[in-house]
Image 1 (cartoon, rainbow, N blue to C red):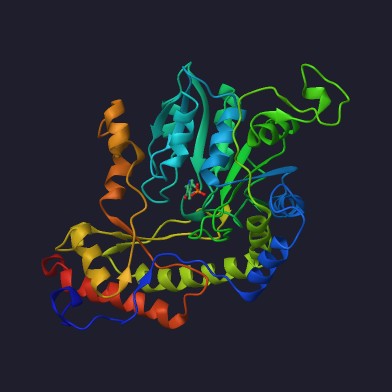
Image 2 (image 1 turned 90 degrees about the vertical axis):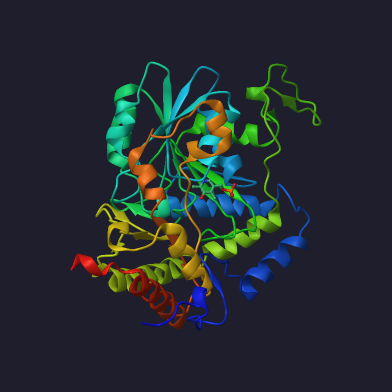
Length: 401
Ligand SMILES: *Cc1c(COP(=O)(O)O)cnc(C)c1O
């Protein structure tokens, strides 16, 4: 058996690779440069162009570009009317921002458990958590795979709830042939550098609802409107604008929008390569009893953002931490997505206790995300597979045959 790098052996590769990385080419740089030479570097034509592109890609009627994905979630929760006293049901395995947006509005997130095989929110768990205070759902398309949209929308319809889809992982994904972004009441995207498409920072909300659209546009700029129909004291004075509610400055700059537009032109390329890599990993791990491969639902045509390596710890003489550190020493640098949100000390201090979502908690103890990004070469993929196999070989339980 080969000596693991963590015990002084030779690492599988010399150059470390991490779980995610942006891809920026000369066209992207040219697009940013051009935007910087324009007349308006914020609130200008590139914002309109980006919003139009997002409508085309998602099939949504309206898109609102904002500063980042967290701002998108915050504004979506505000536009949905979330306020003190409300409960909002949120996926337990997601980035904290999916739940923080509920807290920003003074309401309480209620955490739903995941399915043990897809890792997406379990609609049955959502259903069990509904109370008279429940206002809506924030469900994340975890790793890029679409949530069970039909089931969640049916629950929302039945109980008169709003449905916000956190699609920070899922640009380019389709559900039953329809792009994510056109299905929920509001869908939130992020353009952080680890995501499939980046603007450095950036985010967007898509919706088919005109009223929500106008609300989002106002909230993005302080709650100030230039539309006379929305004013309490309308006038035809050219300079007059009016703050009609309390919003924020969540605007995106035009040079970020230009970068996102340029990146979106490569979305199908990005998507294709990610699918290829996922297939290679699946093929390599499918027959290994020490690894669980994420289940894919047939309704989702997925542009995968994360590849989750889930350990079958019954078959291994190690825990997740040891496996993670061993892989890291081989210069394959994973990350863990995610701590159940309510395990964060901030939430713990609010009174959330362990044990709320058993599937989520079991999941957390067994997973790490391995490299998945557009510029990952076939050789890199082979290195990752080789390192995973090397660590599995070392820790494999012999007595289970
Ligand atoms: C990245 C991410 C966000 C937040 O996006 P930012 O652009 O970083 O603010 C929200 N939800 C999920 C699931 C994410 O992965």
